Image (cartoon, rainbow, N blue to C red; front, side, top):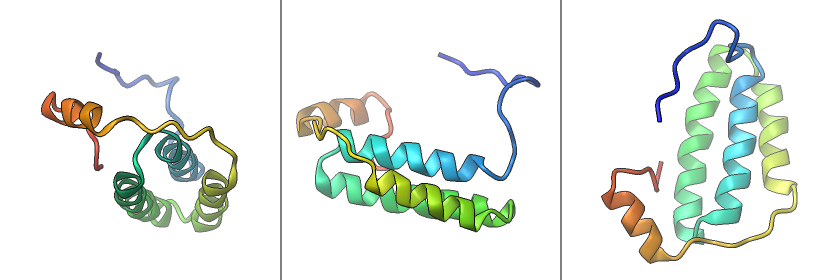
Length: 95
């Protein structure tokens, strides 16, 4: 699948890094085994943190990041075997 840029699409505003971090943390907490989840969350926290600095949106990023850590999720981690298959096929597991 290819996502093409749209002038009507993605908002480049200051809120994007925070929402990206929040959603990634919810996904990680729900679907990745704990060792992989910690690594993945740290990488995405750093990545979106740099982006939030550029947009001067650290307070919004921080608030949404905390929300991503505190909202309840149903924890159903993928088996290690599935993660290995995703990785072999070129999918992102650790980042």
